[in-house]
Image (cartoon, rainbow, N blue to C red; front, side, top):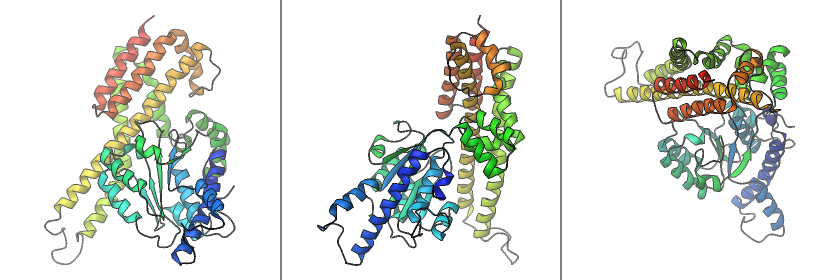
Length: 423
């Protein structure tokens, strides 16, 4: 296993596929270099045309990385980008050359990441990056564009990206990341023009091993965190080291019991939304402060000379635009935090349904089997538990449609309480 790909956890089959493609891409780049020098044409009949065809079949200009949350879609795309730019003559994706280290650090001049600043990726973001990616590489073999959360592309943004993918410059590679190949996650036209690279949720044992070896977490704590993380490596680490994350999980799961009593149902729902809001505010505060300071400095504020205490006139629009982006990002963060809590809650009812049906599958919350899901499976019928899951999923859909979180969660709690109160 090469070093850059060692960051991909539990993805052995895909790792081998990406390694073959990155190796093949070197041959394609070499032929392009020869064509640029006038030594050979990429389109002329050559004795080794069969070899070139094989190489091109192993590598393509557009990839779509899919997988459940936490499976490492963007990590896989970044590792692949590093392997494509790697300058080591012996090892593809050595992890030690300047190209590998800068790609992994996010500072390589020919690798650009598109990350949603707010709820969506705008057409402007896409057009700006596509224009830059059409240039020749400056230091690497390729211009690489990594589109994280491609499911957040607006319709106009997806169309702009589609045009670039349909007619790509010969030195440009697009790496898209999305939860699945379903039309609601990625446009069918974009999907059809990309090579699919599917990731799976890492096994709990693989996650625990990484937490112990890489992060120095105690084995018992690492095993517990891995078992309740739902295959999400980052979440497993947070649960293992952050007490607040553990409290948020307990709060979300406690909603199932609180929903059965009128005296606690709506208070628990309100607390869940408030916690998500507070967490999002805390996450955003530090980043917002840094961005605001950098902008004000760029506009000329904060100096010591005459007239430099405040930014010059005419710059209020830039400040308002930054504040707008920050507000949108804060809203997105809040919804992501709340959605994570809802996923935990849905998994709890899934565990109850699993126990009620006697299915031999791994529980998502094994530590709650004794005091929560076990009693739930005996109290409620499988049909009732299934309707509880549907209530949570409907709440998630409502939040996606911009329903106010308080209303969406309150409606969910009413439905859950009604199902679990029936005998």
